[in-house]
Length: 147
Image (cartoon, rainbow, N blue to C red):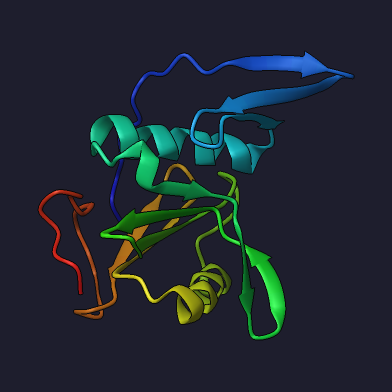
């Protein structure tokens, strides 16, 4: 497990019809603020502010087709015009178990990335597909090679 320290960020939050919304700076749109969305938005800020991943190369909540099913991944980071990392976010109370790993592996069957990340905001695990190992540190964008 990798323990992350999330940066302070001034999130834009509004309420409409008794529902909270948060402005997603990557998608440039308001989205419903759920517990999972809170984890996703904080994780995005970690990638952009702490790890210095280029925001323009981060894709959020896009649809992909996996084995005849349409699914939506949480976050994909691109490097050299190809998917490089998948991040699956869960709300804080959801354990990062085999079902979550299976979900991200199903996405990877379609995307073929170098890094698989699962997080619930308090616990984060990173798997490097080339070495087939769980990592003890989060990969740097600029120094990482493409597998």
